[in-house]
Image 1 (cartoon, protein in one colour):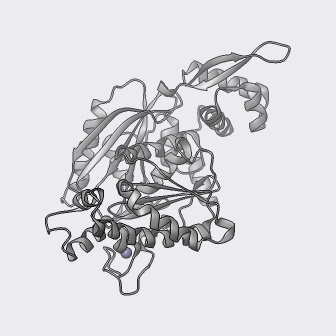
Image 2: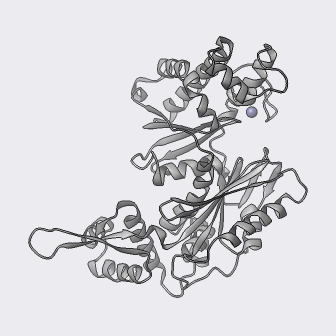
Image 3: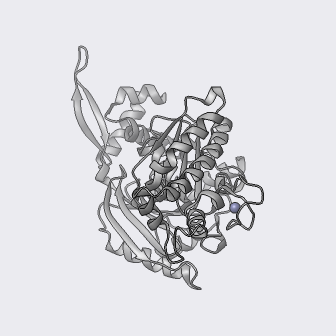
Length: 418
Ligand SMILES: [Zn+2]
């Protein structure tokens, strides 16, 4: 921990602003972003800063166009208080979700509102896949307007991202120990942040979505696989070497079906879409060329065998999630992913099994399922950069580069060496 701190502090461009000033600036910006419109006086009392410090820094932020005066609130006696608010359009961020066969991207503003959407075919198995990914992202960057400034690029990938080592392992994409952020940053010349795709969704939920009011929640994704993002104490829990969240590979069935990880009976091998399709094909419900879309169509039409397949999966999922809830005691379980399109057939058995296995202390946990939209993966990826911009400055050098771009050009990132 101390090693990381000192390294971050050394590499953060402090020459023009001073380190403590930067900490205060980030804290103020973050508070305005999350709690605005807000008065200077409230900022000072919530952050424990002097009025002079708050006035000085907010004056700077106003001059840079990052915040503006939203309104004048009536106050008892005296002059009406000035309420400050973030200017969502003051900067933009690109987010991209890399899948094995395509890349989905978005350009968003500081409030994670989508300004533009991109999608390109991609082949992760190609020998020069990283070069091709760089070319796709380069093209998107070139198509983005130069003003307002771009803070950076966030990338979400299925796999384990080791933040300390800066490397990504993605069995799904066939990438191992890949320093993806560094390679793309060198190629593109903008700050690049990488994380597990479900973590990026959880970060988005925490900053802008259903997790805004919750310090403890889990995001579970279902569809082609089963993923998990854990928010504990208000931030992502990553575990050792970033390996937390491999919920899809929790064993749920002795000698069960073979999983993509090489083991048998993993949750993913029992309830993810490929498993459901395999079961439907075995029973003759689907022919070899038919997939998950056809299975949903059959369930929609009331075909009892299709509904049974979903019901059995829902029951296994409910038991597995009850284990998570008993261990982590989240306030909410937020479901996401393309598999939620089938939620109404999963839900009855899921709810029954979940509630049957919850420990009393966790029994009031709420489960929420949002209508799914593929763009969310990319918005989640963009949230990586937004989080870096508004969080404390000690969580990594790449995040500092993104934040430096908020400094009105005083400290452009110059080096990208790890
Ligand atoms: Zn597995």
